[in-house]
Length: 409
Ligand code: EPU
Image (cartoon, rainbow, N blue to C red; front, side, top):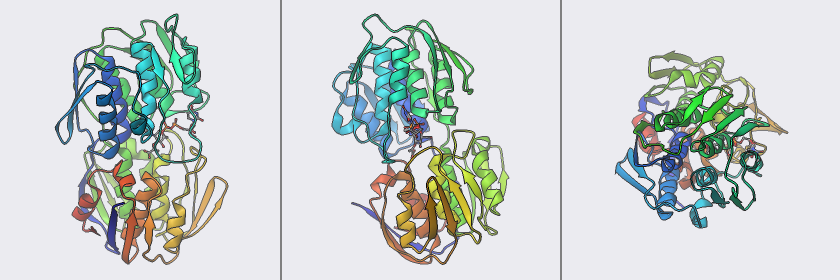
């Protein structure tokens, strides 16, 4: 297990470049295999989960080549959907996209073991309901003996993964698929835009109601991955915790609006440019009341970093986690640093108090990011083990933080 040593108490100051979105990059890699020819992706984040997804697809016969650290070319080559390597699929949640890809492209799919962060139960029931609604049969092994057909499906709740799988399975289907209740997260919209370029007809791009008509003759295309709103938010919240002044470059301020509203409510001054955001957090008091929700709500993936920043405010704050049933495991580490919080069901109340450094171990990707933020703000030396979990989703985190004046090794 690798670790970070963090000497906290230094306000973060400076500019930081935000990379491509992890959760946008992953569906694109899978979707590229639906097309003939090559797709080239720019602004790919060079992070653990993306490298792993690339390796998984290569083992299955695809060609995934990193031309430079942020440019990847992907080609179906000899891809076969059978026997995905369980050792690899079990490490990332995105391996569930093999279902939509394999069923949509090859008419059959075997259920991969999936991994990713542990928030308790992470079922795929509504992915399967959707596949069945389009003519697939089976469970562990899906097939479509009479072929897939068009249809209408209403998601019972918003699911990013199920919406991605719906787009993948419908992309080559030459019948109409109408979907209600789709996720509208920026990275889902990114996939919709890419599929349009491949030749899929989609009405309602960016809305919960999509009407798709696919084509068997999709052709690969170049595409630039959109900026990572969660990486961006993590740096903004680190600025708040340390009462610093940080400018993000290469971001989409409109997409960050749900977070920026919370920052302003907590006393941070925010100035947006065309593709930049400046956060002046000298007056950070916290004290916010926030609920996580699908886009355009406050993103669940920023809930742990927000809680870390609220520990360093001056007012009591509440955060309600409405997306995942069990996403507070990381709080034990913050309590080790002195945090006072009370968890009642899905609602966490933070009572700011003096925080001190500690030795911690990352519980998951964003929980680990929350621990980094707390360690940056608490005066003294903290150590954080298990940082591989964090590096699944953050590129060059220590280097970027050092660029903002942090002492992190
Ligand atoms: N759900 C079901 N049944 C389903 C699908 C989802 O009950 O068939 C429930 C989940 O248990 C959860 C909620 O619906 O309570 C939302 O789950 P969703 O399907 O939207 O999540 P996901 O696709 O598995 C992606 C991100 C997560 C992010 C969520 C929500 C990827 C690879 N993962 O997961 O990102 O938290 O959407 O926005 O895109 C992270 O990056 O740290 C991360 C965990």
